[in-house]
Image 1 (cartoon, helix red, strand yellow):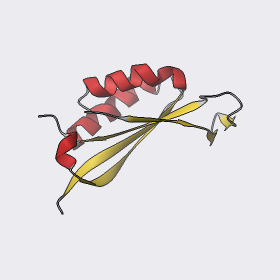
Image 2: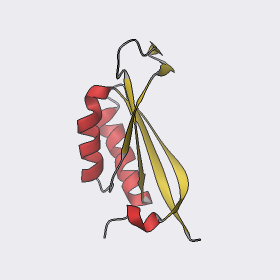
Image 3: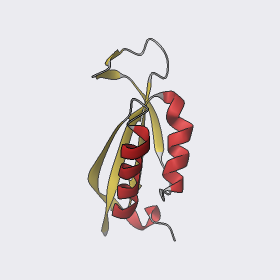
Length: 102
């Protein structure tokens, strides 16, 4: 079995940002993404889930180059204006070639 090394980008944000963030991920070179509804507690207080859709988690598997572009975009454009957390993790992926543009 061949494994490909990619980067898993995880974004936690307000639900209102879903369309804006996912559109930008694709523009930056991601070939797809997964979005999940979440709840939790952080520096901005507890998010109990009393209101549906209080948070979203977006994940995408990308090349190192695309990951860098996403992290730069987050730092320059998202962090100053929105409650967003972004992190990158190495991932060993079966069928990893599926996540790389043409």
